[in-house]
Amino acid sequence: MTTSTRNAAEVFAIVDSLDVPSFAQLFTETGKLVFANCEPFIGRAQIAEGTSAFFATIAGMHHTIVNEWQVEDTTIIELQVTYDRLDGKTADIPVVSIWHRTPEGLIDDYRVYFDLAPVFA
Picture 1 (cartoon, helix red, strand yellow):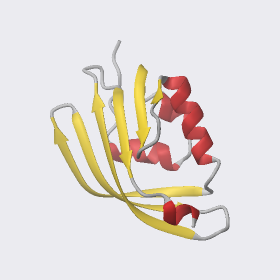
Picture 2 (spheres, helix red, strand yellow):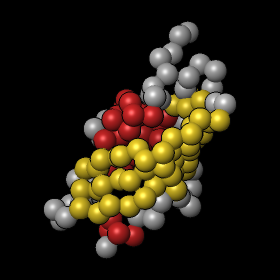
Picture 3 (tube, rainbow, N blue to C red):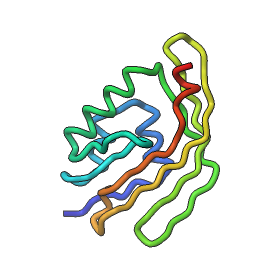
Picture 4 (cartoon, one colour):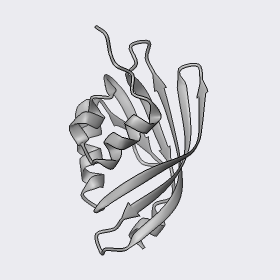
């Protein structure tokens, strides 16, 4: 099977569109997603469920890539993310995302490091 590998800008465009099914399809069947110090979501179904639950707490978001590093099959991204809150305000926070890809180009481990306190203040 040939898989089209999405670059970082394409991954964050999917996230910013709040397209949960497309985001979940970036992962292997047993892929893992970890938000900060939360319990991991394992597998596409949990990733979709957890991501959908998070998206329900915000009106939208926009990721701006500040720096990007590639170390073999691992991508490290420094971002500035603007969250559109449900009360109509915005919150800007720094974020670091790290993911590892399989040889087929799917993500098997994705970690997001951030402090969401300003988003929900």
